[in-house]
Image 1: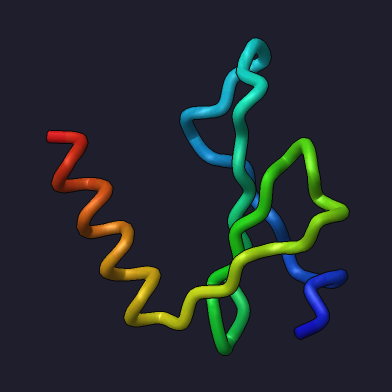
Image 2 (image 1 turned 30 degrees about the vertical axis):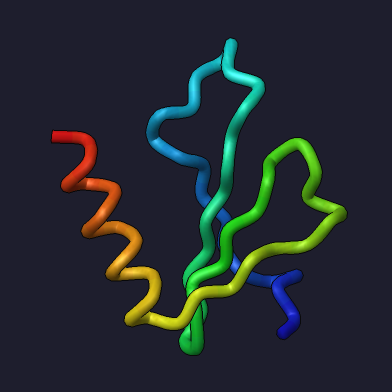
Length: 63
């Protein structure tokens, strides 16, 4: 999948002093996640159901 034209957004938990950041982009087929400091290594792709399950679990664990 060509991710060169997607709009990447940085995690809302990222701040100027954080070295451990991820970026997320949504495509019609999947959500992509990549390491901000290692963009050249590519991205992990998750279909919609996988991404929703991840977000649900992450929000639940944050409570």
